Amino acid sequence: MHLFTSLGLAAGAAVATSAAVLQMNASETITSGIIPPTTTPHMPYIPPGGIGVNNTPPQYVAMSDFDWQSINLALNQEWIELDLFNYGLAKFSVQDFQDAGLYAEDRFLIEFMAQQEIGHALLLSNILGPYAAKPCTYRYPFNTVREFIDFCQKLTRFGESGVYGFIEHLDSRPAAQLLLQSITTEARQQMIFRQFLGLFPMPVWFETGITQSMAWTLLAPYLVSCPAENPRIAWQNFPALNVTNNPDATPYFNTSTAGNSTSPGITNNRSEPLSFGGRQVNFTWELPGTPIGYNDSYRTNTTAGPAKFVAWISQLNTTYTPLENVQGESGTTNQPDPRVFGNDTAPVINGTMFVALVDQEVNITPANISKLNSHIVAGPALYQAG
Image (cartoon, rainbow, N blue to C red; front, side, top):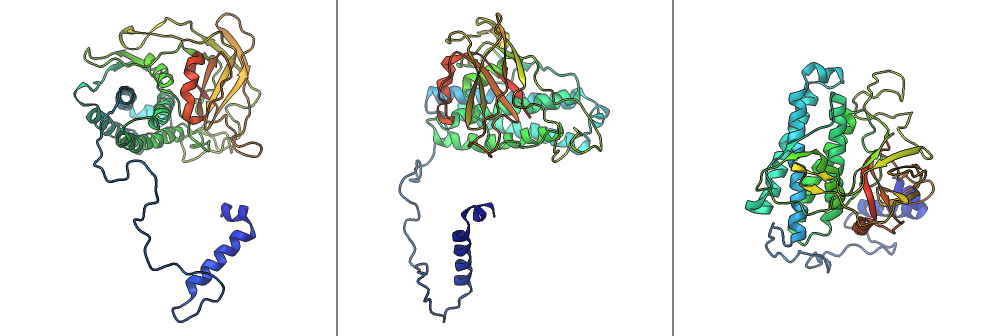
């Protein structure tokens, strides 16, 4: 309907003409100059081009080191999600969940999401073969049900985005297809956890892709120990970035006041946004060389110069703001308010998104975001914009 409105009379005329053609019977003669569809099929039904459409049997395997290490990272993500969902269900009582507005059906949905992760982990393990990573032990930063749900929606956010960032670049298109069909499920999980938290379920026009190194930087702090036979994760760990005044979505307000309730719901039209353009955002960050990951067996690293800008990575856009008030490893910036396609379109800064400190403004598009890796001073961190 919106499409026809934007096209105006020409679109409306085309619709009316099509309807008229459909109403004609076989005995009527077409005299309006409209050419009826041919009864001869166009062979072979596939326009020229495309990749992997010649009916060659697909091989669902990694075809390069890049493939193997990308899928290995994704498998480690699936294992922590499986553990996390089950851990939260075991840690908190039925009453704890009810106090957060979540009941038996909601707990069952989390249980089912854990079962989905079993399927995802088996899928990726089958692609990788006998050297596929096994589950590890993990640490989690929550003490309440609301904090558990918030961590779930953040973990699934960077798990989802981490695959979007590399799936287009895999040498194995068959493996990419399987990853696509699993990561779309994870996207739905992230939306459900937002609903459980009382957040607006899908506040963006486009989902965000990040690089493997960005995803590994976000994941590594939660891995405590892993089996000795697990293959080493190849990607870079950037120094940690902390948003010290990150908007907090965990407070629980069960109220009838329109726009103020944060109770679980299919959707909540929040009248008070978590963040806004012009808001001062405060950062602290670590220097490189910090032990990180399971058994502290990795070290953070950066190849960038001094931090000068904040990169806001969201939807199709990477937006930069100057890093100000720098004192040692702390600084501030102001939240920008860019639009996806210019004025009167969706705000870029929304949802659960990513910020990083960089040494220069780099022209980034979704398909070449890896170009940003060499310029990251610290981060990314998750920013709860909405």
